[in-house]
Image 1: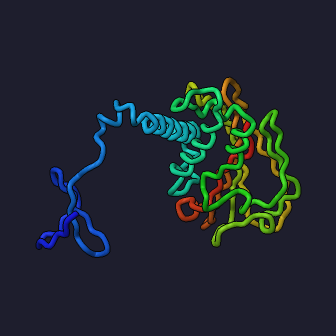
Image 2 (image 1 turned 120 degrees about the vertical axis):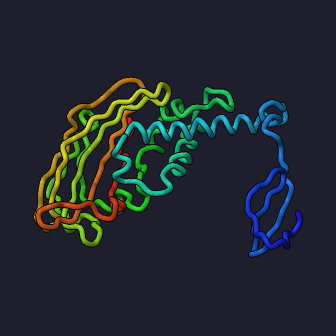
Image 3 (image 1 turned 45 degrees about the vertical axis):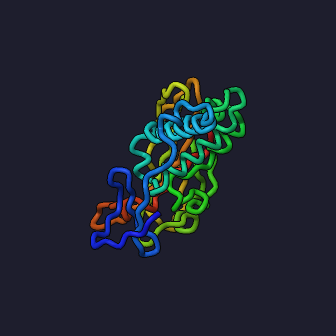
Length: 249
């Protein structure tokens, strides 16, 4: 490693030299490391290849789930969703006890009770976890995906952002096969209510409950709005919204 004292403060790579800054000083070093060809073929790097294959698989599984949910994800997500979901899928993949190392799959892991438990409770927006926003008890019926509330008082049982005047709730049923990529989604009605002290009974009933190979995911979406001149506007690009997996079957 050498120190760069030239007039031009370069950062980046030129041919086999890498220029970088550290502690306010500029340095230059020759590119090194193991070649890609050696990693792909050398028996000494078999564990590296196995880890890389499983890493790629876990990333693909997370992307598969996000795509299956479509636009819902954009209604309630944080900036680190992809990396958090990668960690989640890696944990589930590790539960695969039948595949060889380097070939373990999320589809096998999520078929276990522990895998489903890991996926259950995942919040797509870490800044607005369901348990920190909704304090009203509700009844969930796994047979039809219905979520029902009784005597729900929004102003007392909802942690709502400043400026919010209304909120909406919707439930979702997602059938997803992590092995084949097959997916189907069913949406409930949307319940939109003012944030007031008036008790209400709300029922979210999915229009359909998709089934098939793979697993069923039941989710809840909570969105916040500010009403102005009779029109409801989303608050701050929906950064306070909730999207959480409440059950996995």
